Image 1 (cartoon, rainbow, N blue to C red):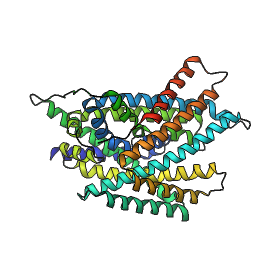
Image 2 (image 1 turned 60 degrees about the horizontal axis):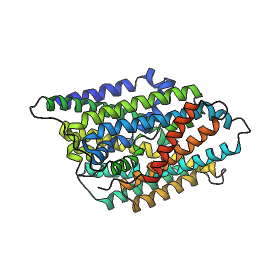
Image 3 (image 1 turned 45 degrees about the horizontal axis):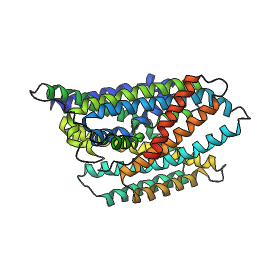
Image 4 (image 1 turned 30 degrees about the vertical axis):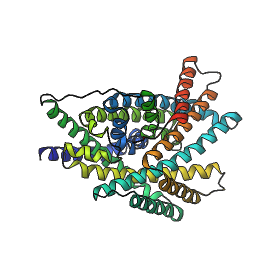
Length: 402
């Protein structure tokens, strides 16, 4: 009972803070929220069960590695904001730079299509979990219905109205995540106080296989690249600074979450379930499952709307406006529906991870081209190293095989 009251109080306090006019009117905060919302969106909900299944109690080490790789990729994107964008906007950019940039935009649009399928399929799973129903066919029906709804609204009325839901959804989601972290800390203190309780670090039998699994969940830290495409509203320095804020804050949240969840992760080593976070939270406090289902639904829907808008716009731009944004939304929904009916959630995660890795790889090539003449050797070597890692993800990432 005390835990429930405490966690509700934490969530209410954080919501009140995030809805403060002074914070909401801050340009830096608004520029930070867009990438932050993407980074700690759906990935946050599946991170614990996926990492536990891949590497059991070494999940915190794995999460630290993923966060560091993500920060390195973020440095490449920030480099491109500072150096590649001025060249691309100069009127006469090198043809090689222009071709790679356009290709990366197309790949990003396709990656967003795949992530939309993942977001909404996960939303359906959480809704059914709330009703204590486990039925893949029904989940696919729900996902298809939502995809058609978003596409039709986008075709006839635009996505502006739906996108207005995003900021409120983000604030509520962050508040619930804060409550979850406090609840896990409270649980851990009580757990550690009991004699004989300790985290068991079981050896990982096949690290190469585990690394392939980890490469397949790159999607859980994707989202920081959205800052690259906010140039119409924010200058380069603001986007660079706030993207860094978003990555540092989200990285700290992920590491805190996985670290605090370690006493519970052993229960997920043997099973693979995208809604396992609900079972984990129920061990902490009775109120958390309902709170997390609310966070999941709002998070998935707002993320799917944002990515549908982004991918529809990118596909329209890539086709030189021959494909209208409305037609782009229909195309996005159609491909997402095909994915939902032909692949599992975990296969979709891996497909999306490979697609985002390919986009980031192309952005590394953009950075290398832009660095000609003024890039330092250490910078170029770092970009090449990150590109090599991303190539391995594209080639060898595999879905969590259960």
